[in-house]
Image 1 (cartoon, one colour):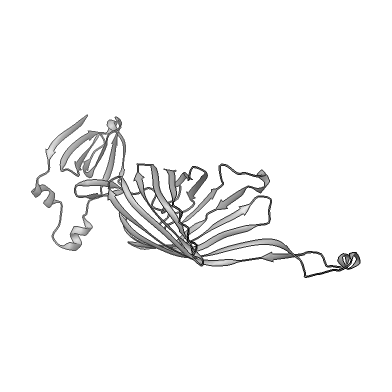
Image 2 (cartoon, helix red, strand yellow; image 1 turned 180 degrees about the horizontal axis):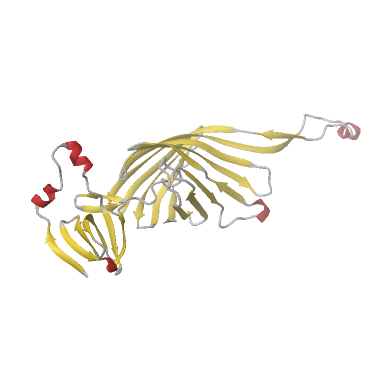
Length: 310
């Protein structure tokens, strides 16, 4: 049975606090998420508990008395109260539209998603700071022995109250081929869950083999036969890349996101909105390559991601 006992008076709310800023901070109540067996969800602070029931004060100020048998779960809420409304934390805050932020998955957390309907991926928290991911195209036009696969390890080496820093690699391999490519990066994110700035710097690298021929201009068949054969050469090109991205919470379930990359021969600009569910999110946006050529291409961004916990 759920019983509403009434509204907490301002005097009662004030009595929960001790004088002095330090004492007030020490006694800031923990916000809980109460899920009932009928599927309803209540956010508030626990006032008292017994073996049979829990008394909560909701964020609206109402006092609820709930029997234990009706409680499906009671755990700290992941989010914050803004203007009297509970805003759940972005369960997908470890990434922008494509690139990672410096935030880290917790151990046992992860997400499964699809970029642009064709690029599935999964990322899992190995520890609270280390995560690993993998992906491959849904549709690949070619022999399966040459299928591309990407690996995305990331390690968060610093975590402060509002700023985090991480390093990682987006490493691409082609199955059955001695071809490697990828991006090694460092990324820093500062701000809260609703508003944050992310900057990153990286090095795009590749390694492949190529046959090169020495100059030879024979005038007779015999001279042509004497020309040296191809020489197998390993190529390792590389180039720097910079990234700037941002997030701004527009409402309880909508967040604006921008992600922009600059490299030697141009840039890629992108922006979109993320629609936030409890576990499922959808990103809708556009991106535009910027080059020295007089062409302009605007392409859609459509991402769907589902998060899970251990």
